[in-house]
Amino acid sequence: MKIAQWMILAMLILTGTACNNQTEITSSDSDLVSNEQNPASSQTVGFHDTMVEVTSVHDHEENLHLFEMSASEIASGWTTFRFQNSSHTDHFFLIYQVPEEAIEAAEQAGEPLLDHWFQGVTKPFQEEFNPYVRGDIDYGTFVDNLVGSIFEKGPWFFDPGAPPMGGPGFTSAGFTSETTVHLEPGEYIVECYVKDENEIFHSYRGYAGSANCH
Ligand SMILES: [Cu+2]
Image (tube, rainbow, N blue to C red; front, side):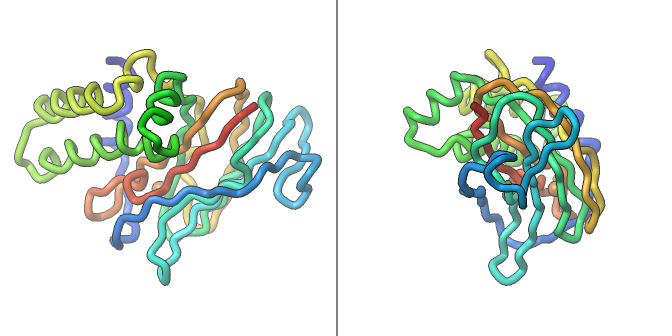
C-alpha cells in the first residue's frame, strides 16, 4: 500500500489553476526517434544517450490537453526528458515503469496501454476523489474507496506495482526543464498531477503519454 499512500499524498498536496474545458485523452503517436536519426528532436549531451522532448499543449480551438512526446520508441539507457511547457499553467510529470501484468491486461482488453492505465488508475482516482473534495466523504473513506477501486480495475498498480522513475518538477508556463533517468527496456507512461480550479487532475484531462523503451 506504500505506493498508493504516496501517490495519494502527492496528488492531494498539488494544486494549480488550468483550463476548465472538456476532457480529452490524447497521446502522441509519433514515430521512432533516436539521437542519430532525428537531430532536430534529440541530441547527445555528455553521457545522455537519448533525448525525448515532451511538450505540454493546450489547444483551445480543438479543446485538447495533452503531452506531445517526440518519440514513442526510445532506446534504453540514460534518457533525458526535456519538458517544454507550452500551455498556460504549471505542470510536472512522473514517469512510471508499467508492469508486465498491466501490459498483458491491456492486450487482453484490446486497449492501448495508456488507455488501460487511465481506466485502471487515473479514472478511479478522479472518480473516488470527487466525493471527497465535495465534502461528501472523509479522507479515510476516500482512501478505502480508492484502494478498492484500483484493486478491482488496475490490480497490477499494487501488485507487483509500477515503479516511479522520477521526472521533471514543477515547470511554469513558458519554461523548459530537464531530467535524466536510466531506463531499462519496457513500457513507460508519464502523468501530471497538478489539479485545475475544478479539482480535476491534469492526468484526467489528458496530460499523459506513453513510450516503449527497447
Ligand atoms: Cu499538468
